Image 1: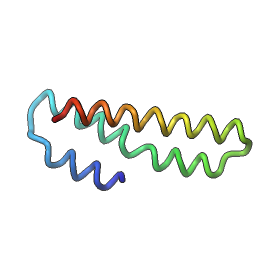
Image 2: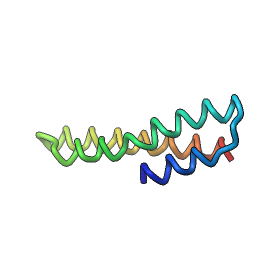
Image 3: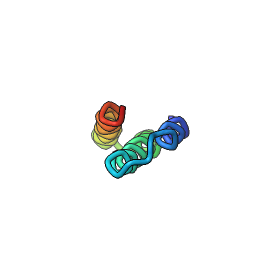
Length: 70
């Protein structure tokens, strides 16, 4: 997913407004995979759920950025 997000951002038009959104999409769109990996290595059920919640939040931010960019 992260590679697809980077390719999508690279295809966005170059404007000041879209550059700011693009940077946010890259940040929020590439971190869920690392956070998911961290969730798989969680030390407890509570830790696992907390890390999955972080994944959900990042994906939500990515979706909002994506909608704003097009």
